[in-house]
Image (cartoon, rainbow, N blue to C red; front, top):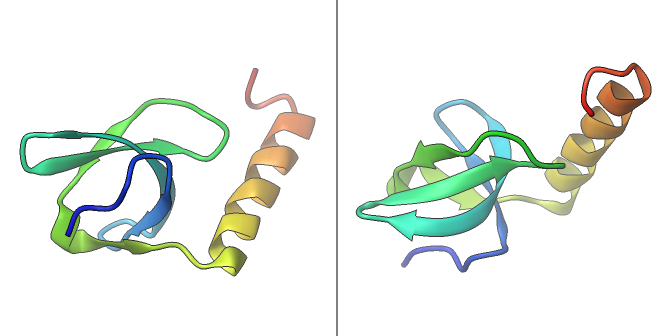
Length: 71
């Protein structure tokens, strides 16, 4: 079953946490925490993100933002 739009998943190929933005053909469209460029992920290589993984992604985004690495 495909994850619902708006949920956070982990792309197990890369370890990246992304928010499901949509479904395009057989792929999930994921966007990194805090925004950015979307990427395609096969549904069978995605799993739900844990609260710890979501918190880690949010912390990494906040740290990058404080260093001026993201707009």
